[in-house]
Length: 148
Image 1 (cartoon, rainbow, N blue to C red):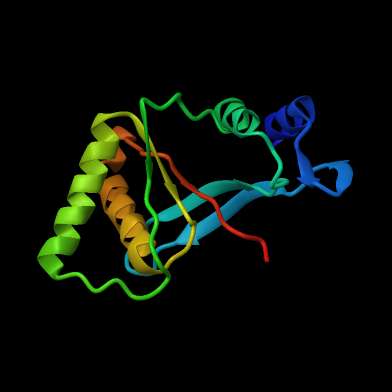
Image 2: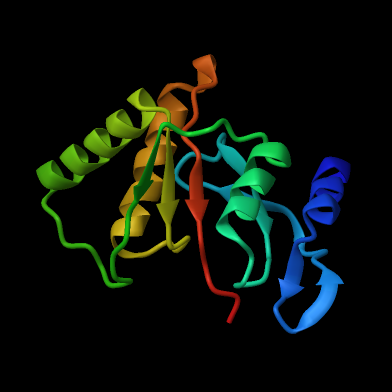
């Protein structure tokens, strides 16, 4: 956490456009998968001003979270309603997305929710991480959500 705090201060990352103080809202979120209790995922988060420069955000993620520079950024968007795909289409989407991301050194960007097509992204990454846990293979998934 000390590294994150240092990078936040160095990059002058604010909590809000209206407040001059540096953000102190960052840390870890714990994700438990009820389907397989042996998998617990800690993911990092930061709350920052909407006006934060994109280059500053990328520099923060690379320095504080040690994310490698991506060769590709894949943004997946969709509504929050239930995603009605056939089982075959769902599996094809999940396998294809993970294969594309893993083989191209990509970052996945989502709305950070657990609904609709974004839920399918989460399931795909969970399955990929579970199958590749011995090799410590990972695809960064960055959820950009609202605090309201």
